[in-house]
Image (cartoon, rainbow, N blue to C red; front, side, top):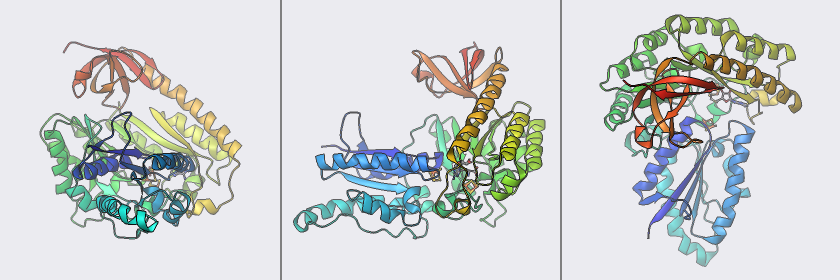
Length: 452
Ligand code: SAH
Ligand code: SF4
Ligand code: F3S
């Protein structure tokens, strides 16, 4: 009889990639991915707690497994990732969802196989004793990321893209953010290990590598061997083979000239940068502890565009931070018009327990909502104007997937990160095409393959 696993993933790319490692651990134990319509024997929730909505989504779905447990008392349910790593949250999950068998934080994912074995071997005993399955896990253990990275077989699920972690954790403590509390301090992988992994991915046929970190620009700061992000990019660019390199996320305070120079001179690193701005108000940026101001941000944009005129720049923006007045919000609207981002991910500030901003006086939700809709409307118009500029041009596109809503169509991105939908078939995935853009629709472009 085959045993199946299902992983529900919430949150950022870091979590998506960690789920690929969890899949590797589970397949190492003999489990297979659960086919549609079958019941899983192990269900894992890899959670996020960046905003209240992310937490509620995961909690709602964890609640649904109660019925699954009733149907099959032997199903093993595990909650892992950022949510349980918050102060007191592991205990709260245990109390509220007693049918959850395993709770692990971000630091000890490699213990999952042992924990599953423990649950299964105690099942018989529990039956006779009527005891609980759950055992408290020490969420304060030192991180085991690195051993997990170097020794865990990863089941990659995003061909032709491969995620590669370069740095874990965050030292920045932006006053609204929970990440430094749940992911711990910055820890860089060695350059050799990163280069080996990138090489392996390219040898295995991956056509794009996305380097991951909460702040990739501080890569190497903790290594004391002179390694830094620019040097890493330089070495990756020298590797053989045709493949693209992207990375996220870059903190504006740490983006160096050397990194911009590497991007501009490299043949593999895409002209595409995600550079979260959060706010356009100097006062709010200060209260957020972002450690740059609007002038510095605008200088960076100019420095990037003078080196790479066609660069696609995307951002994250938050509205409704406790000290944001209407005037501050208008500063954000203003800087968004000045920069002209190709796309922006916009968020309503959500107070996170234990962070400094959560203790400040909060803005009414209705005001936050009204601000975000104004911002989205303005950004959509900019996105559309910038998309229109692509029409008529020919761009190299890496085919990444079949298009979700159209028959006989595929999609991929330009070097600058623009999504393009064009005619094609599943066998095109992983190939590069020159695509002529014939139409644009907000963030999405449409076109057809050009003969090479
Ligand atoms: N390390 C990345 C961001 C990680 S979180 C960086 O510093 O850029 C991704 C985005 O979520 C952030 O850029 C921010 O815009 C948003 N975010 C973080 N904390 C939030 C909160 N408490 N409420 C709403 N949005 C938040
Ligand atoms: Fe959070 Fe700031 Fe760190 Fe990004 S840099 S993860 S927003 S604390
Ligand atoms: Fe969420 Fe954790 Fe990522 S809180 S955004 S999954 S680092």
